[in-house]
Length: 378
Image (cartoon, rainbow, N blue to C red):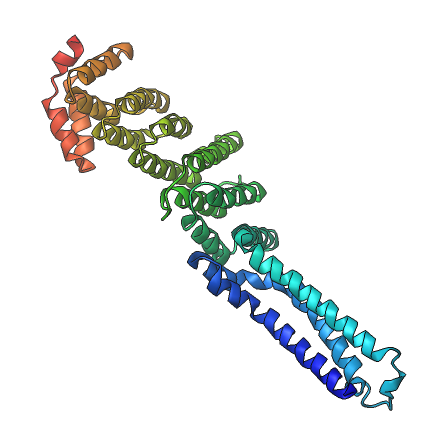
Protein backbone atom coordinates (compact mmCIF):
# COMPACT_ATOMS: atom_id res chain seq x y z
CA UNK A 1 0.00 0.00 0.00
CA UNK A 2 2.80 2.37 0.87
CA UNK A 3 4.52 1.73 -2.45
CA UNK A 4 1.22 2.16 -4.33
CA UNK A 5 0.68 5.53 -2.66
CA UNK A 6 4.12 6.78 -3.72
CA UNK A 7 3.56 5.59 -7.29
CA UNK A 8 0.17 7.33 -7.39
CA UNK A 9 1.69 10.61 -6.18
CA UNK A 10 4.39 10.45 -8.84
CA UNK A 11 1.90 9.63 -11.62
CA UNK A 12 -0.44 12.47 -10.66
CA UNK A 13 2.50 14.90 -10.39
CA UNK A 14 3.67 13.99 -13.88
CA UNK A 15 0.10 14.50 -15.16
CA UNK A 16 -0.09 17.94 -13.55
CA UNK A 17 3.29 18.86 -15.03
CA UNK A 18 2.24 17.80 -18.53
CA UNK A 19 -1.02 19.73 -18.09
CA UNK A 20 0.91 22.94 -17.42
CA UNK A 21 2.96 22.41 -20.57
CA UNK A 22 -0.25 22.14 -22.58
CA UNK A 23 -1.90 25.10 -20.85
CA UNK A 24 -0.78 27.72 -23.42
CA UNK A 25 -2.32 25.65 -26.21
CA UNK A 26 -5.58 25.40 -24.24
CA UNK A 27 -5.64 29.17 -23.73
CA UNK A 28 -4.90 29.81 -27.40
CA UNK A 29 -7.68 27.57 -28.66
CA UNK A 30 -10.42 28.68 -26.26
CA UNK A 31 -9.81 32.20 -25.00
CA UNK A 32 -7.52 34.14 -27.32
CA UNK A 33 -8.66 35.90 -30.52
CA UNK A 34 -7.17 34.83 -33.81
CA UNK A 35 -4.68 37.69 -34.07
CA UNK A 36 -3.07 36.81 -30.74
CA UNK A 37 -2.71 33.11 -31.43
CA UNK A 38 0.06 33.75 -33.91
CA UNK A 39 1.81 36.02 -31.44
CA UNK A 40 1.72 33.51 -28.59
CA UNK A 41 3.73 30.99 -30.57
CA UNK A 42 6.69 33.35 -30.46
CA UNK A 43 6.30 35.07 -27.13
CA UNK A 44 4.50 32.82 -24.66
CA UNK A 45 7.62 30.86 -23.76
CA UNK A 46 9.15 33.96 -22.20
CA UNK A 47 6.40 33.95 -19.54
CA UNK A 48 6.31 30.16 -19.11
CA UNK A 49 9.97 29.46 -18.41
CA UNK A 50 9.92 30.47 -14.73
CA UNK A 51 6.70 28.52 -14.15
CA UNK A 52 7.99 25.36 -15.82
CA UNK A 53 11.27 25.68 -13.91
CA UNK A 54 9.49 25.89 -10.55
CA UNK A 55 7.30 22.87 -11.26
CA UNK A 56 10.25 20.93 -12.69
CA UNK A 57 12.14 21.35 -9.40
CA UNK A 58 9.10 20.16 -7.42
CA UNK A 59 8.52 17.21 -9.76
CA UNK A 60 12.16 16.11 -9.47
CA UNK A 61 11.97 16.43 -5.70
CA UNK A 62 8.87 14.21 -5.62
CA UNK A 63 10.50 11.59 -7.83
CA UNK A 64 13.71 11.59 -5.79
CA UNK A 65 11.84 11.25 -2.53
CA UNK A 66 9.69 8.44 -3.94
CA UNK A 67 12.58 6.67 -5.68
CA UNK A 68 15.81 7.84 -4.06
CA UNK A 69 17.87 5.24 -5.89
CA UNK A 70 17.28 7.16 -9.13
CA UNK A 71 19.76 9.69 -7.75
CA UNK A 72 21.92 7.52 -5.56
CA UNK A 73 22.16 4.49 -7.82
CA UNK A 74 25.93 4.41 -7.38
CA UNK A 75 25.72 4.72 -3.61
CA UNK A 76 23.87 2.23 -1.42
CA UNK A 77 20.98 4.17 0.07
CA UNK A 78 18.11 3.10 2.23
CA UNK A 79 14.89 4.93 1.48
CA UNK A 80 13.87 4.49 5.06
CA UNK A 81 16.57 6.98 6.04
CA UNK A 82 14.36 9.82 4.76
CA UNK A 83 12.47 11.10 7.83
CA UNK A 84 8.74 11.62 7.36
CA UNK A 85 8.99 10.42 3.78
CA UNK A 86 5.23 10.07 3.26
CA UNK A 87 4.49 13.49 4.74
CA UNK A 88 7.30 15.11 2.76
CA UNK A 89 6.16 13.75 -0.58
CA UNK A 90 2.56 14.75 0.21
CA UNK A 91 3.65 18.29 1.06
CA UNK A 92 5.67 18.52 -2.16
CA UNK A 93 2.69 17.30 -4.16
CA UNK A 94 0.33 19.89 -2.64
CA UNK A 95 2.90 22.62 -3.24
CA UNK A 96 3.05 21.57 -6.89
CA UNK A 97 -0.75 21.47 -7.12
CA UNK A 98 -1.04 24.92 -5.51
CA UNK A 99 1.44 26.43 -7.96
CA UNK A 100 -0.44 24.85 -10.86
CA UNK A 101 -3.70 26.44 -9.67
CA UNK A 102 -1.95 29.82 -9.43
CA UNK A 103 -0.59 29.46 -12.96
CA UNK A 104 -4.03 28.35 -14.15
CA UNK A 105 -5.50 31.56 -12.72
CA UNK A 106 -2.81 33.65 -14.39
CA UNK A 107 -3.37 32.08 -17.81
CA UNK A 108 -7.14 31.64 -17.85
CA UNK A 109 -8.77 34.21 -15.57
CA UNK A 110 -6.34 36.96 -16.53
CA UNK A 111 -5.98 35.96 -20.19
CA UNK A 112 -7.84 39.09 -21.29
CA UNK A 113 -4.71 41.07 -20.41
CA UNK A 114 -2.55 38.92 -22.64
CA UNK A 115 -2.46 41.47 -25.46
CA UNK A 116 -0.75 44.05 -23.26
CA UNK A 117 1.61 41.34 -22.00
CA UNK A 118 2.62 40.38 -25.54
CA UNK A 119 3.17 44.02 -26.54
CA UNK A 120 5.37 44.51 -23.47
CA UNK A 121 7.44 41.41 -24.28
CA UNK A 122 7.96 42.47 -27.91
CA UNK A 123 8.94 45.99 -26.82
CA UNK A 124 11.57 44.58 -24.44
CA UNK A 125 12.96 42.30 -27.16
CA UNK A 126 13.14 45.18 -29.63
CA UNK A 127 14.96 47.41 -27.14
CA UNK A 128 17.36 44.56 -26.32
CA UNK A 129 18.11 43.93 -30.01
CA UNK A 130 18.66 47.65 -30.62
CA UNK A 131 21.02 47.99 -27.65
CA UNK A 132 22.90 44.88 -28.75
CA UNK A 133 23.18 45.46 -32.51
CA UNK A 134 22.05 49.04 -33.12
CA UNK A 135 19.15 47.71 -35.22
CA UNK A 136 15.58 46.62 -34.55
CA UNK A 137 14.74 42.96 -35.06
CA UNK A 138 12.48 42.94 -38.17
CA UNK A 139 10.59 39.82 -37.02
CA UNK A 140 9.43 41.51 -33.82
CA UNK A 141 8.68 44.73 -35.69
CA UNK A 142 6.36 42.71 -37.95
CA UNK A 143 4.68 41.29 -34.85
CA UNK A 144 4.18 44.76 -33.37
CA UNK A 145 2.73 46.03 -36.65
CA UNK A 146 0.42 43.02 -36.82
CA UNK A 147 -0.87 43.75 -33.31
CA UNK A 148 -1.41 47.40 -34.18
CA UNK A 149 -3.38 46.64 -37.35
CA UNK A 150 -5.59 43.99 -35.74
CA UNK A 151 -6.24 45.83 -32.47
CA UNK A 152 -9.55 47.50 -31.78
CA UNK A 153 -9.51 51.29 -31.84
CA UNK A 154 -9.19 52.81 -28.39
CA UNK A 155 -7.48 51.11 -25.46
CA UNK A 156 -6.10 48.15 -27.43
CA UNK A 157 -4.45 50.30 -30.09
CA UNK A 158 -3.25 52.74 -27.42
CA UNK A 159 -1.21 49.92 -25.84
CA UNK A 160 0.67 49.44 -29.12
CA UNK A 161 1.10 53.19 -29.70
CA UNK A 162 2.50 53.75 -26.22
CA UNK A 163 4.93 50.86 -26.63
CA UNK A 164 6.11 52.29 -29.97
CA UNK A 165 6.49 55.73 -28.40
CA UNK A 166 8.65 54.29 -25.61
CA UNK A 167 10.70 52.46 -28.22
CA UNK A 168 11.09 55.63 -30.30
CA UNK A 169 12.45 57.50 -27.29
CA UNK A 170 15.13 54.82 -26.93
CA UNK A 171 16.33 55.34 -30.49
CA UNK A 172 19.20 57.71 -31.05
CA UNK A 173 18.71 59.84 -34.14
CA UNK A 174 21.80 59.54 -36.30
CA UNK A 175 22.84 63.13 -36.99
CA UNK A 176 25.89 62.20 -39.07
CA UNK A 177 25.60 63.13 -42.76
CA UNK A 178 24.62 60.37 -45.12
CA UNK A 179 22.80 57.43 -43.53
CA UNK A 180 19.09 57.46 -42.85
CA UNK A 181 17.54 56.52 -39.53
CA UNK A 182 16.02 53.30 -40.86
CA UNK A 183 14.72 52.15 -37.47
CA UNK A 184 12.91 55.45 -36.95
CA UNK A 185 11.39 55.27 -40.44
CA UNK A 186 10.03 51.79 -39.69
CA UNK A 187 8.48 52.96 -36.41
CA UNK A 188 6.86 55.94 -38.15
CA UNK A 189 5.25 53.61 -40.67
CA UNK A 190 4.03 51.12 -38.06
CA UNK A 191 2.42 53.94 -36.08
CA UNK A 192 0.62 55.04 -39.24
CA UNK A 193 -0.59 51.54 -40.10
CA UNK A 194 -1.94 51.08 -36.58
CA UNK A 195 -4.45 53.91 -37.03
CA UNK A 196 -4.84 54.36 -40.80
CA UNK A 197 -4.76 50.74 -42.04
CA UNK A 198 -6.38 49.03 -39.09
CA UNK A 199 -8.97 46.36 -39.87
CA UNK A 200 -11.00 47.55 -36.88
CA UNK A 201 -12.90 50.79 -36.52
CA UNK A 202 -10.39 53.56 -35.90
CA UNK A 203 -10.29 55.90 -32.93
CA UNK A 204 -9.91 59.67 -33.07
CA UNK A 205 -7.84 59.65 -29.88
CA UNK A 206 -5.42 57.09 -31.35
CA UNK A 207 -4.87 59.30 -34.41
CA UNK A 208 -4.24 62.31 -32.18
CA UNK A 209 -1.63 60.34 -30.21
CA UNK A 210 0.21 59.32 -33.37
CA UNK A 211 0.20 62.87 -34.77
CA UNK A 212 1.59 64.13 -31.45
CA UNK A 213 4.45 61.63 -31.72
CA UNK A 214 5.12 62.76 -35.30
CA UNK A 215 5.25 66.35 -34.16
CA UNK A 216 7.77 65.53 -31.42
CA UNK A 217 9.97 63.68 -33.93
CA UNK A 218 9.86 66.61 -36.36
CA UNK A 219 10.80 69.06 -33.63
CA UNK A 220 13.77 66.87 -32.67
CA UNK A 221 14.87 66.55 -36.30
CA UNK A 222 14.61 70.31 -36.69
CA UNK A 223 16.71 70.91 -33.57
CA UNK A 224 19.43 68.52 -34.80
CA UNK A 225 19.46 69.93 -38.33
CA UNK A 226 22.46 71.90 -39.56
CA UNK A 227 23.34 73.53 -42.86
CA UNK A 228 25.64 70.61 -43.65
CA UNK A 229 23.09 68.01 -42.59
CA UNK A 230 19.47 69.25 -42.80
CA UNK A 231 17.76 66.29 -41.11
CA UNK A 232 14.39 68.02 -41.39
CA UNK A 233 14.61 67.46 -45.15
CA UNK A 234 15.56 63.80 -44.93
CA UNK A 235 13.67 60.57 -45.58
CA UNK A 236 12.38 60.50 -42.01
CA UNK A 237 10.47 63.71 -42.67
CA UNK A 238 9.21 62.43 -46.02
CA UNK A 239 7.87 59.32 -44.31
CA UNK A 240 6.07 61.44 -41.71
CA UNK A 241 4.59 63.55 -44.52
CA UNK A 242 3.23 60.49 -46.32
CA UNK A 243 1.94 58.94 -43.11
CA UNK A 244 0.27 62.16 -41.96
CA UNK A 245 -1.47 62.35 -45.33
CA UNK A 246 -2.76 58.77 -44.91
CA UNK A 247 -4.06 59.60 -41.43
CA UNK A 248 -5.75 62.72 -42.84
CA UNK A 249 -7.50 60.65 -45.51
CA UNK A 250 -8.61 58.06 -42.95
CA UNK A 251 -9.98 60.77 -40.64
CA UNK A 252 -11.86 62.51 -43.47
CA UNK A 253 -13.41 59.23 -44.57
CA UNK A 254 -14.66 58.76 -41.01
CA UNK A 255 -15.83 62.40 -40.83
CA UNK A 256 -13.29 63.34 -38.13
CA UNK A 257 -13.14 66.87 -39.51
CA UNK A 258 -11.82 68.21 -36.18
CA UNK A 259 -8.62 66.25 -36.85
CA UNK A 260 -7.57 68.61 -39.63
CA UNK A 261 -6.06 71.34 -37.43
CA UNK A 262 -3.76 68.70 -35.91
CA UNK A 263 -2.89 67.34 -39.34
CA UNK A 264 -2.09 70.82 -40.61
CA UNK A 265 0.05 71.58 -37.56
CA UNK A 266 2.21 68.56 -38.39
CA UNK A 267 2.44 69.32 -42.11
CA UNK A 268 3.32 72.95 -41.36
CA UNK A 269 6.60 71.70 -39.87
CA UNK A 270 7.52 69.81 -43.06
CA UNK A 271 9.26 71.66 -45.89
CA UNK A 272 7.67 71.14 -49.31
CA UNK A 273 4.41 69.75 -47.97
CA UNK A 274 2.05 71.74 -50.23
CA UNK A 275 1.49 68.69 -52.47
CA UNK A 276 -0.09 66.77 -49.59
CA UNK A 277 -2.03 69.83 -48.52
CA UNK A 278 -3.40 70.06 -52.06
CA UNK A 279 -4.61 66.43 -51.97
CA UNK A 280 -6.23 66.91 -48.56
CA UNK A 281 -7.94 70.09 -49.76
CA UNK A 282 -9.38 68.31 -52.81
CA UNK A 283 -10.80 65.53 -50.67
CA UNK A 284 -12.32 68.06 -48.27
CA UNK A 285 -13.97 69.94 -51.15
CA UNK A 286 -15.30 66.69 -52.55
CA UNK A 287 -16.88 65.89 -49.18
CA UNK A 288 -18.25 69.44 -48.85
CA UNK A 289 -16.12 70.05 -45.77
CA UNK A 290 -15.45 73.66 -46.72
CA UNK A 291 -14.00 74.70 -43.37
CA UNK A 292 -11.28 72.10 -43.74
CA UNK A 293 -10.67 73.12 -47.36
CA UNK A 294 -10.42 76.80 -46.40
CA UNK A 295 -7.89 76.00 -43.67
CA UNK A 296 -5.88 74.00 -46.19
CA UNK A 297 -5.91 76.88 -48.67
CA UNK A 298 -4.59 79.26 -46.03
CA UNK A 299 -1.92 76.82 -44.84
CA UNK A 300 -0.85 76.10 -48.42
CA UNK A 301 -0.19 79.78 -49.06
CA UNK A 302 1.88 80.08 -45.88
CA UNK A 303 3.77 76.89 -46.76
CA UNK A 304 4.58 78.12 -50.27
CA UNK A 305 5.81 81.47 -48.96
CA UNK A 306 8.00 79.72 -46.39
CA UNK A 307 9.46 77.28 -48.89
CA UNK A 308 9.94 79.96 -51.53
CA UNK A 309 8.50 77.74 -54.26
CA UNK A 310 6.29 78.44 -57.24
CA UNK A 311 2.64 78.38 -56.17
CA UNK A 312 1.38 75.72 -58.58
CA UNK A 313 -0.55 73.82 -55.94
CA UNK A 314 -2.00 77.04 -54.58
CA UNK A 315 -3.32 78.07 -58.01
CA UNK A 316 -4.67 74.56 -58.51
CA UNK A 317 -6.61 74.82 -55.25
CA UNK A 318 -7.83 78.31 -56.21
CA UNK A 319 -9.22 76.83 -59.45
CA UNK A 320 -11.15 74.16 -57.55
CA UNK A 321 -12.54 76.75 -55.14
CA UNK A 322 -13.48 79.06 -58.00
CA UNK A 323 -15.75 76.49 -59.59
CA UNK A 324 -17.27 75.08 -56.37
CA UNK A 325 -20.02 77.67 -56.01
CA UNK A 326 -20.41 81.41 -55.51
CA UNK A 327 -19.34 81.41 -51.85
CA UNK A 328 -16.24 79.33 -52.59
CA UNK A 329 -15.44 81.65 -55.50
CA UNK A 330 -15.63 84.64 -53.16
CA UNK A 331 -13.31 82.80 -50.75
CA UNK A 332 -10.79 82.21 -53.54
CA UNK A 333 -10.78 85.89 -54.55
CA UNK A 334 -10.42 87.01 -50.94
CA UNK A 335 -7.44 84.65 -50.48
CA UNK A 336 -5.73 86.14 -53.53
CA UNK A 337 -6.39 89.68 -52.32
CA UNK A 338 -5.33 89.16 -48.69
CA UNK A 339 -2.11 87.42 -49.77
CA UNK A 340 -1.49 90.07 -52.49
CA UNK A 341 -1.00 87.40 -55.14
CA UNK A 342 -0.61 88.74 -58.67
CA UNK A 343 -2.28 86.34 -61.10
CA UNK A 344 -0.66 86.32 -64.53
CA UNK A 345 -1.15 84.20 -67.60
CA UNK A 346 2.37 82.86 -67.17
CA UNK A 347 1.65 81.80 -63.57
CA UNK A 348 -1.51 79.97 -64.67
CA UNK A 349 0.36 78.39 -67.59
CA UNK A 350 3.07 77.12 -65.24
CA UNK A 351 0.41 75.70 -62.91
CA UNK A 352 -1.31 73.93 -65.82
CA UNK A 353 1.95 72.34 -66.95
CA UNK A 354 2.81 71.32 -63.39
CA UNK A 355 -0.49 69.52 -62.82
CA UNK A 356 -0.49 68.07 -66.33
CA UNK A 357 2.85 66.38 -65.63
CA UNK A 358 1.32 64.93 -62.45
CA UNK A 359 -1.73 63.72 -64.45
CA UNK A 360 -4.05 65.91 -62.38
CA UNK A 361 -6.20 66.42 -65.47
CA UNK A 362 -9.35 67.72 -63.71
CA UNK A 363 -7.19 70.42 -62.12
CA UNK A 364 -5.63 71.26 -65.49
CA UNK A 365 -9.09 71.72 -67.03
CA UNK A 366 -10.22 74.02 -64.22
CA UNK A 367 -7.08 76.18 -64.42
CA UNK A 368 -7.68 76.44 -68.18
CA UNK A 369 -11.06 78.02 -67.47
CA UNK A 370 -9.59 80.66 -65.12
CA UNK A 371 -9.19 84.19 -66.41
CA UNK A 372 -6.21 86.04 -64.99
CA UNK A 373 -7.82 89.44 -65.53
CA UNK A 374 -11.01 88.39 -63.74
CA UNK A 375 -9.08 87.01 -60.77
CA UNK A 376 -6.89 90.09 -60.45
CA UNK A 377 -9.84 92.37 -60.76
CA UNK A 378 -11.61 90.72 -57.83
